[in-house]
Image 1 (tube, chains in turn brown, green):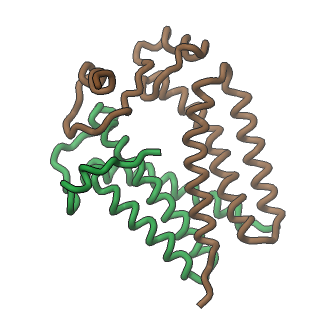
Image 2 (cartoon, chains in turn green, purple):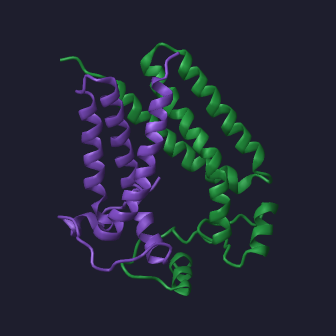
Image 3 (cartoon, helix red, strand yellow):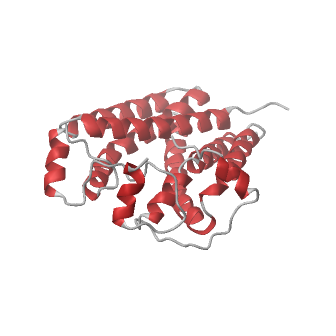
Length: 137
Length: 110
């Protein structure tokens, strides 16, 4: 029986695409002063990969390019979602970034703490405890 | 024009979107300690895709398996989000077999 590697290529591309986007959106959003250049780059790169995917006859390459292109297009949208998480305090703000410093000043819920950087405790956690859990080690 | 990659990319986006939903639901009712089972199942699904002769079937199965593996690494953070009140929290969870052993392992997060 002949193995079909399309699924494996799809799996590896999807996993790496999600991982890469997850990490690079967070790092970039944290450090850039303005979001729109990053958003423009992600949209452009995503479209280029999709066009390339449409033009190749090689199915394994079309698979990888198609999936990677769409995940990068989604990342463009994630930049906006990540900034919303910063405003809500669901992701840590970077006080050295002027855009984040402004968010910290304007949004009482924003914080420099990463409230997710701990192990689960198995019960609901009040705001004060949420802070001590990530600050006291 | 070869639309296979583009359509597959859109289908993968939908599969990843489903991941958001099942990670939230599964963590709420079963807890994050199921992660090794989810990761193992995802790996089997990806390996299974090798034996599907249809390109569409193989590709969708592969993307689904990858989203299961990724989701398994998201369960721990989702548990904390629920504890923080960002998502509904249920105390009574259907815990996995070998919970005591799994609890000693460091849950992956990428």
